[in-house]
Image 1 (cartoon, protein in one colour):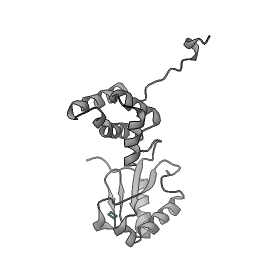
Image 2 (cartoon, protein in one colour):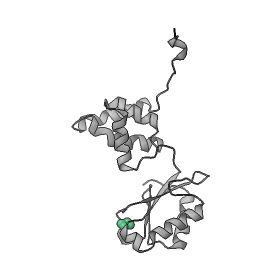
Image 3 (tube, rainbow, N blue to C red):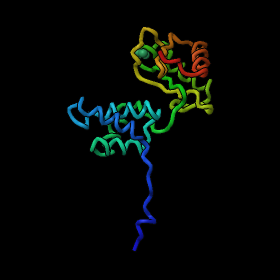
Image 4 (tube, rainbow, N blue to C red):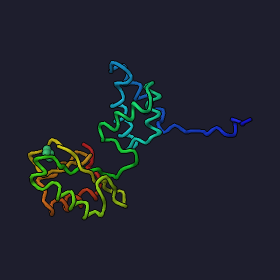
Length: 175
Ligand code: FES
């Protein structure tokens, strides 16, 4: 017979009480708990800078849905990384307006400059570099947007290097 007292794995919740309370506070504003999935993912992402599997399961528990439903929402948007990301996350656009002006080549240039692949983070944890579809700043094509709100463009190879140097100095101060 298995002694459950010795086999049970104690699991410390990844979402603290305050964050759980914030998620629950959202529920009256939505037609169902399921509809809170996306804002809950944003809250967790803002707090942890990623949404690990354990956090997905806890969101599901709070919202009384399945972890698969949380995962579906998360993967549909493609915005939420599962592992911690760099201090600054930057997306280089590869949609039409930017592509026609060399966006793909500039993404390759940025990858070569940082010695990483899209989706990876520099070894010092400063920058996570990704590609994105239209970032909504086509006037600045070819363009990039950082997750602290900075918009870069029109870019060329030299401006990509200047952008990366600026991003390495850290996030834009809030306000
Ligand atoms: S196509 Fe690149 S920002 Fe719109």
